[in-house]
Image (cartoon, rainbow, N blue to C red; front, top):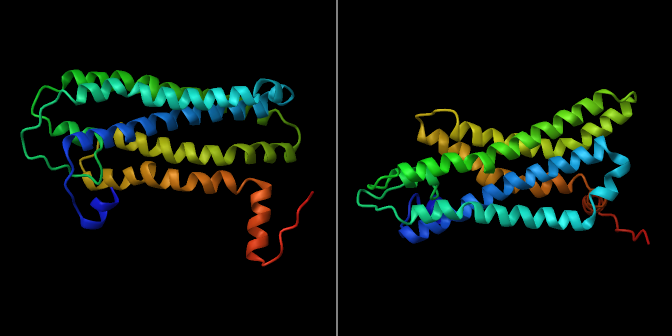
Length: 232
């Protein structure tokens, strides 16, 4: 992808393009599931704080992460298997900076109706259902916050959700614009694609890490040229 951006175009084989499309779709699907799992975590932390440590055990955390990755990389296998059966006989030029699924399928000269139907059906368990779970979780969170009598408690609860919510807005906002809002500008689609393929993964470590007190202390010591003291 970097080579294509740097050289303003490059050659890639059809199997290579399918592999790139699979990694992109699988990673995006995994991100949807992980965001839903994190929304459930925020729901437990705010709505059921006394039961949080008991429910969100280390075993459940590992199980959720493994399940999200496995589901993300297996749910797109059907799409890729159908993609390998397509025939490409026209001008094989993708007007994009990577092998995105939609412009790649548009190049096929064989019937793509079955693949398009499968993609539409699969979008519900991959995108729609996790998004609904996120909305339900945050609806419960908002209701719980509004019932708090302490202003300090409300600010702390909103602060707990702000990092995850900002990632959800960036990720799903760009996906909705790309796949649900009709747009005739391919240039606009490519620009928005940068948000959920590059910007969101790039900012993830910063958004979540800066909220960690220990990491903030280390950053503060580095920039103020002060020695890092061992609390132990």
